[in-house]
Length: 162
Image (cartoon, rainbow, N blue to C red; front, side, top):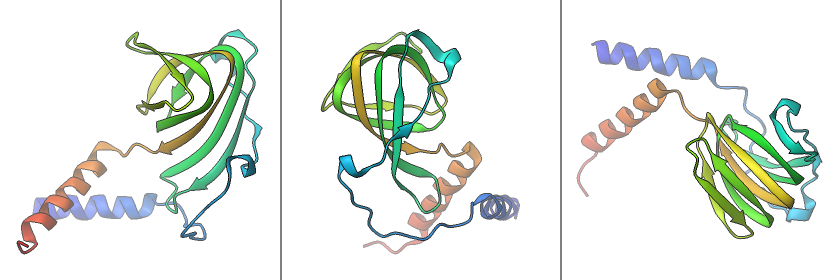
């Protein structure tokens, strides 16, 4: 009984927290040069050195607003960056040397893929210019993630064996 109450409470919370749905698009296609980039200033207190200038453009967003894809570029400079969402990046051109919170240092170049956990900081050092494709995903609250895992486990237990 308590499990049913917890599940019902979690599901009602989820329903209330879901933003209004946008018009659904089954397929979004564009060339990289078709994504309009607007100025996306870096928070001044995060800049360590130089005068980095960033631009960003939205390619697409999930219907529930939990994920999005962006094209982002930046000129030379060094800055700290907070990843409010989980982010997977594909470096399209240029390079960036990234120092993670744990001190790990990696240089990402065109063709490299990197993952940044949501809620973390990293220092980005760009010598000339970098352009990336960013796949962003909102991190789920732990109770919600647990509830979804439980639902999947229950579905597997109740489904007939193939």
